Amino acid sequence: MKEIVVSGIRPTGNLHLGNYFGAVKSFIEMQHNCQCYFFIADWHSLTTHPHPDNIRHNVKTILAEYLACGIDPATATIYVQSDVREVAELYLYLNMNAYLGELERVTSFKDKVRSQPDNVNAGLLTYPSLMAADIIVHKAAKVPVGKDQEQHVEMARKFARRFNTIYGVDYFVEPASYHLSETAVKVPGLDGSGKMGKSEGNAIYLVDDAETIRKKVMRAVTDAGPTVPNSPKSEAIANLFLLLNIVSDQTTCDYFNDQYNACTIRYGDLKKQLAEDISRFCTPIRERILELLKNDAYLDRIALQGAECARASAAKTLREVREIIGFRGN
Ligand code: AMP
Image 1 (cartoon, rainbow, N blue to C red):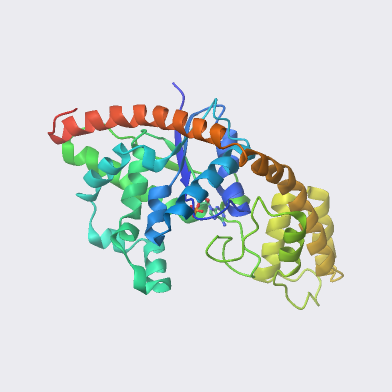
Image 2: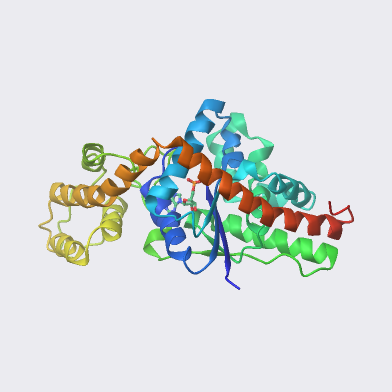
């Protein structure tokens, strides 16, 4: 039997390079050898209170972007989270055994408490139990995610184990996070520090055109330049090199590294090359995204087909879970 894989992305904007190299690239690689469920996490996005029009627009966009990146609906199940109500039921059960202290200690929750003190809602607090439900509902063994999501997958393992212990069963599989490569697990932004993210305003989107990419890259934070040969790189420069590593070939990376080590580097040249290589990567995906977005009927069909398949898997789990808990299965 094929290994089961589950992962999702919140529809809060377009997919960026961080999403692609942290998660979607693994989706594409895994879809041929594993039984994959890739979803659009629209329930998760409700923590930010989006307008209904935005939800509809963003769900459609992510669906088109998944397909444009190369996720094959004939091989992988692509679905919208809110189409599978069983996930919400499992979330309820998991919440009964999730404790305030452990939820409050989750790093992403603590970050949100600091960054948005006026909107610390229960959905944010229980984000890890909803994510656990997303994963364990299909009994996934592997979850391809970026580094920022590792703690959430660890919580999913904990909740799966706890359910098994409480009910004395060996029912849920304990999922593990999966990373394609070390460099891709945390794609940096262009602002000198931290990771690339939608809310950080430092992202390059797969749908960005060449001119937008050029402008964004040319504005990226740098430093005054090295004055001593082979000196260590500042965070801003290390980030630019990390991006170069991700999108450019080895010869290009070596060339700019040598220039840096010899103190002859011109950051303008590095950025120009980086912008070109990012554009070369994004352009074909961008073209496919724009084409797919014109085809509502096709996108609807894919979402419907994915929902049916994901629902069948989730419904089976929930029938069994209800019986384990002591409820009627149906
Ligand atoms: P999000 O956009 O926060 O819903 O994240 C969707 C997926 O993209 C998750 O698997 C994240 O771990 C991954 N991801 C988001 N930003 C980055 C980043 N800068 N580097 C690597 N992975 C990322």
